Amino acid sequence: MSLIKKPASTALRRLLVLGVAMFLGTGLTRGQQNSVRRAPKPVALMGVEVLRDLEYVPGGHERNRLDLYLPEKAARPRPVILYVHGGGWQGGDKSNGPAFRFAAKGYAVASMNYRFSQHATFPAQIYDCKAAVRWLRANARKYGLDADHIGAWGGSAGGHLVALLGTTAGVKELEGPGGNEEQSSRVQAVVDWFGPTDFLTVGAKETRTQLLGGDPQTNKEKALKASPMTYVSKDAAPFLIMHGDEDQTVPIAQSETFAAALKKAGADATFVVIKGGKHGGALFTNAESMKLIEDFFARHLARATPAQP
Image (cartoon, rainbow, N blue to C red; front, top):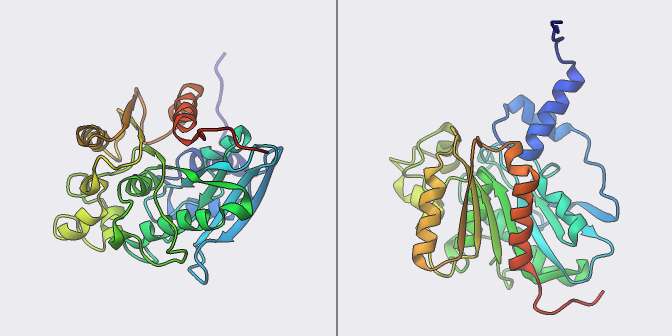
């Protein structure tokens, strides 16, 4: 019996777009990105308090907001996972992502927006990420957060930004404004999904050119400044780097070379090749991949002694 496929309904197409955005935050058209941003907010997780649109830069841009997911019964202070969405530094939103499930595992999860490249070129985006980390530390007591154990996780453009967070602690020129300057922007663990790490070798794609305000090859100083490879040292945070071997957007060599450089410098780096993986997708969020991430964060964000409720 042959089956005739019917055209997908508008509602189904929207669900598919939302599903892609939830796991990737990358590769959407402008119209699709706008649709995702207008989508209803995700349903709150059972036993998790959700605080939305917290301003992490006082008086800053409208994108300088984050959502905070607080497990109600977890011991305090709660370790934190900061999730940074992808979208080519031009789209995406904090309301979707794979990190939320970790709020059900005792982590506080902060999902942030940051300024797009159409709002401001680099280093505005890493300024925002560092401001968010400082804000989390400054407000740790208020929200029951463990200021000593903050991890960062992101994919594609978000992977690039969390890789910078993991390699540039103490680099003053990338700290930027944004308040809470007395706090550190250092993170204790990084999960980098297929983020570009060297803008001189990754290619001059339109989104990368717009981020830098010019072609990387003719704007080499800016390209080097934006590249996590520039800052590799033994003082980098522990890294879990995951990349698909069929990624046609960011070559897997970007992660291979970056992981090798971290290891050579004496940093803690684990590189995982996702066989058959493209630029994100279900292979990154299946049970095996999530277990790797869960074990990684448990290893690096656990407290030395049990916290009191």
